[in-house]
Image (cartoon, rainbow, N blue to C red; front, side, top):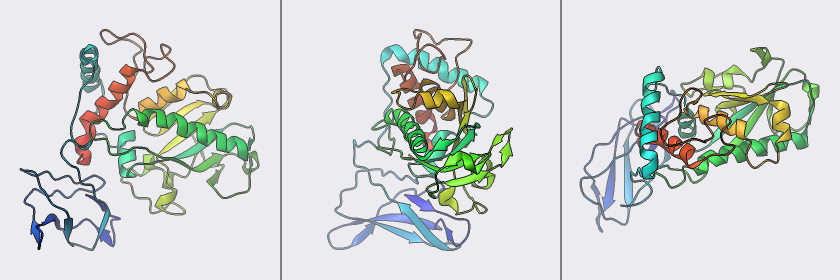
Length: 326
């Protein structure tokens, strides 16, 4: 059960429960029914429930009740649990997680990983492009930039499909805005994206802070022009003359020339690496886990997502999924 709560006239319920159809009437299903915001509220039952109909009963509290999504899982469905990495990866995966536990200052308390963003959006992600270059961009180039971003993001999301209760078969990427120093650089007149002009932060064009999740981690955007649907979760920061990359919960930064020269590449490996950081994956500059040598998150040793990268990614989900009630 996923509730909608805007902090105003629509709130989570005071209580809720499920009922099953007996053939002649609805009967309560005993269970513990949690009430959480920005998370799936999951209830399991002591014994299997067999019915042809389920009904949700909601008791309103401070305001009207908003219900966004209901999911019902059958025994043995993808909603169940499961963690079964190959035997040769168990030790290095444990080493990686223990290393992260000992080096990340707020590993479990931090609430703006890419995971949090996808789940808060109920299975999608929004981007804004920071065009940190004096070059012009045509509408065709813009569309290619968007398509390349979506294609690379999908490679990480495909790792999760059908795995360990991951609830989405796809995670759409939407670019909602562009930030630029001079509007004339953007050679299109349509209104498909919001345009932010000469709002400078870190000596680079910045998309409106009022619309950015990095600046509004409550998930509310009361001052965002156009409302919450125009918010962005991450920035794709494309900088002229920039070598290498950077990534975090705020998004990814890579060279604009590098990106444009790889619009048709199967794997834009620097971008893929930095996306990994946005979901919590670590760097491996000064150590290598036992028994593995070459993988994407060990910079310079692989150019695509390897099996070990995929299982490190899934391990993050394994450790964080309970916060979403999954």
